[in-house]
Length: 356
Image 1 (cartoon, rainbow, N blue to C red):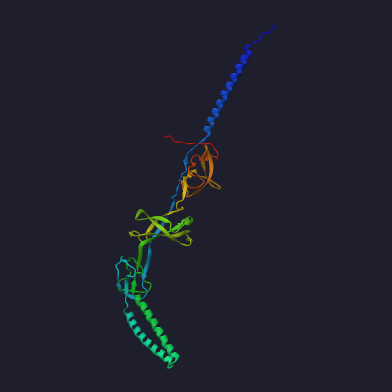
Image 2: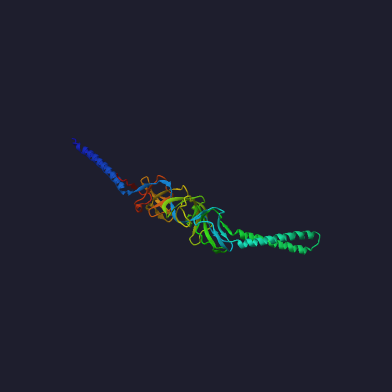
């Protein structure tokens, strides 16, 4: 006898195993897709800007004063009466031109007396010189006449000096002001008679804060405007003080510019635009919101390989809206400017792209 074998059972078992394998494969595929979708959902959306290195143009607005290139108060050096005023107020005068004539009548009368006395003493000195050679007079007598001669010569020289000061002339070419004395007035040494200014060029004096004094260089160009208009003018730095002002902690700087049109007057105020960076300096400007403050300074997040990467930076001239990056960011880098507080170094991010 033999036992009947059931051939359907092995077949059913094989079918069950195949179905199980297919089911597992489908399940693994679904899980994989689910995980991929989950990773995309976990990426933090961020806004980015592309860094562009540009020539920087950052400046400080300073207050300046316009002054003539030369200015002098014309004064009398002797005590005399004004006998002539040889200009009209506001005239342009040239160097050496007569401005005032003072009374010299008494001085010239005294000059004649002294000149006559001088001739007499000179003759006596010559006679005494001949006599001293023959020992007809004592050396003491000759010394006395020699002393007298030197004294009169000194008096004549001083008198000539006083007479020369009765003519007051312009020390340089320029615009004369309004005379402060009238014809016939008695003047004395040190009394200011009138003001003379050379306004062919003007100086602009202004003070630079201590933090910017390294940018003060002879030959550096500045721009300025006046109260008359918003037109920008250019000047060149020619000098600066050797030390800072103790109270303001600032450095006085002097620049010069042409005044061919005579539009600038001494004493006018000027708004000076002073560049606080080296000429031709370049840098990258980004929104201030991108900065991350830290104990060692500042850093930013850059977008690299779909992740946020922390990069240390050095900054300059930070304002409420933007900041200049000097080092740490290269031209073309993508700087993250949003969701900064939600990020950490290496965290996955996705750039938000605005649709048109």
